[in-house]
Length: 283
Image 1 (spheres, one colour):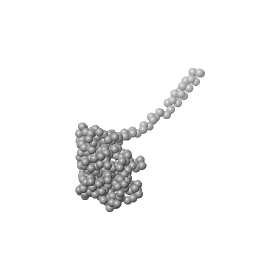
Image 2 (cartoon, one colour):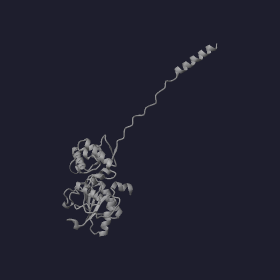
Image 3 (cartoon, helix red, strand yellow):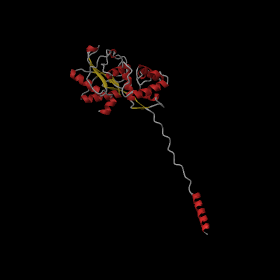
Image 4 (cartoon, one colour):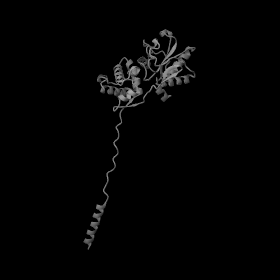
């Protein structure tokens, strides 16, 4: 009798096990996209201004990784020899980037070798993503002078700091407008400021305010060239800069006066030297 009960119990247990719901696999998470490395456009623009003006092949601090990725992309598209893929945005890289811009159909100031937001993004498709993009913005007229919206915003802020309006005697995008300008006003970010009625102290104060908001700015005197007193200003990091403006920006960073003689900077000391974007972040 005991054996019968045990056998019956075994049948019940076997049946219950057989009726148990089958185990299900845990749901699988969808595969995660692999994040691309980044290229800091602000850093690339700074290197593209400074490095061609260096006497050596030093790398601009904070730009090396981003520049290297840009150069690797240019190399992959056969615009830059691998010898120059070194993180230094020198003249060979400028020339290679200009050739790449021309391959996209750009001409004139848009194919200067200075990276713009669209060309930089297109170059990096599948290779890198662009962070801290810089745009010159659209072209506008302010104080009866042509400039882009980025330059206007910078000038408006300098005027706010000074508590006064400034007169503009020459704006941007003015190819061949003033022969003594050596092409610096051919592209964006370039301004000449009137100093009419200003004392020497006020002229220096204006140059200082312009530097604070991100311009390379100098008080120009008749002793320096065939011009009257004025303040010459170039918006650092403007992707629409002409080659001449690009070189003046690099010279400013390196401590020169922005003239052909490359004499020591004679303007007011402002440290650190910041772009407009850096000014907005750290003011």
